[in-house]
Image (tube, rainbow, N blue to C red; front, side, top):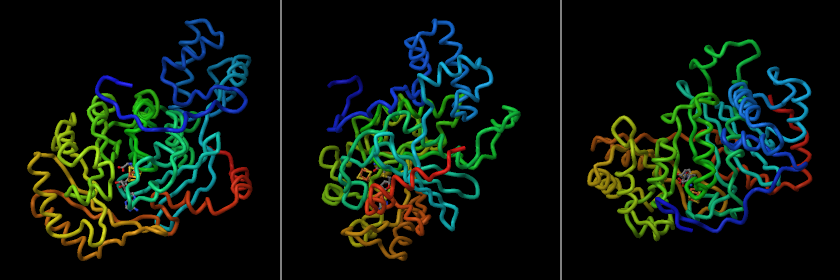
Length: 401
Ligand code: SAH
Ligand code: SF4
C-alpha cells in the first residue's frame, strides 16, 4: 500500500488481539482516540472530552492504574469506566537487577508474547532501552533477536506501557500530595529512552510514532525529544517520515563500510545500500552539530574492525558532511553466534583513528553481563523453561506500583 513519504511493508503475522474480558486498554490511545472511545461507550461529547483530559493526566502524569484511585471522578462513574476500560501494563515474567545497577525485564503481552526491556543507570542519566516488536524480521547475522521468528508488532500501548512500567518499578510517579512543579523538575532516574531493544522500530512505524508522541506529551510523561533515540538498521524510505513525524534523535546501525561486509552482516543493505543510507542521514531533519546522528558499529573480530575500515568510516562520514558520532559496541556473544568480539586493543586503535579525524568514537562498556542484559538473551534463556514454570513466575510477581 503506497503511503505519502514512502513505506516499507514487511510480512507481520498479525496485530495484537483485544484484551481478555473485552475491555479496551486506553494506554496507547491518542487523546482524540480516547475521547472517541468514551463517546462510543455512551458518554455525551462534552463529558467524554472532560473525562479524557482528566484520565490522561491521571494515567500519564500520576501513573494511576486503577479508576477507583481517580479522586476527580465520581465513584459511580469510576466503576462505569472500570467495567469498560483497562489501564494496562505489560506483565512481568522476570525482573533482574545486576550488580552494576542495570535492570532487565522479560515482559509478556496479554496474548502471551515475550519481549525485553533494559534500564541502564549512569551517574548523570538513566537510559531505558525499549522494544518495538516481538522478534525481528531482519536477520542481522550478529544479532540474537534476528534469529527469532517475528511474532508480531508491539502496539502503541505496549510500547508506552514499557515506560510506564519502568516508572512504576523505579517509583518515579509523584506521591499523593506531591506538587506537580516539583515532579516536573529534574532529578529522576529515568531520563532517556532508546528504541534499541527487540525489533526494527521503522517496520512498526505507526505504533512507534503514536507511542513516542504520548511519551513526549507535555501533560503526561513529558520526555523531551532530545532525550529519545530511535535506532534503525537502515529502513531508508521511512527515515524522512521518522524525522518529520517523530523528530527524535537518530541512531543508525551501520556496522560495516563496504557493500560486501554490510550485505552479509546487515542483509537489509542489499535493499538499501550504504550510499542511500548516508544520503538519508544527511537529509534527516534537525541533524546538526548539537544533535548528531549516532552510528552504531559492532566490533566483530576480523570482519569489520581493521584500520582500513576505520579510515573508510571517517571518509564516508566526511564525504556526506554528517554531524556524527560513532558508538563502538563490543560484540556481545550468544550461544551459536558465528562471531567473536574484537580484542580490546583493536577496538582502541579503531576508536583512535576515528577520534583523531575529529569524530567522537566512544567504546561502549558492556553492562549487566551477569543478568544477560544483551539483546535477546533473556528471552532465549527463558524459552528453555517450561511454559508452566513461566506462568507460575508471572503469577508470583508483586503488583506494579
Ligand atoms: N533494529 C534496530 C534496533 C534494535 S538493535 C537496529 O538494528 O538498529 C539495537 C542495537 O544493538 C543495534 O545497533 C544492533 O546492531 C545492536 N546489536 C544487536 N545484537 C548485538 C550483539 N550481539 N552485540 C552487540 N550489539 C548488538
Ligand atoms: Fe533486527 Fe536490529 Fe537485530 Fe538487525 S540488529 S536483527 S534490525 S533487532
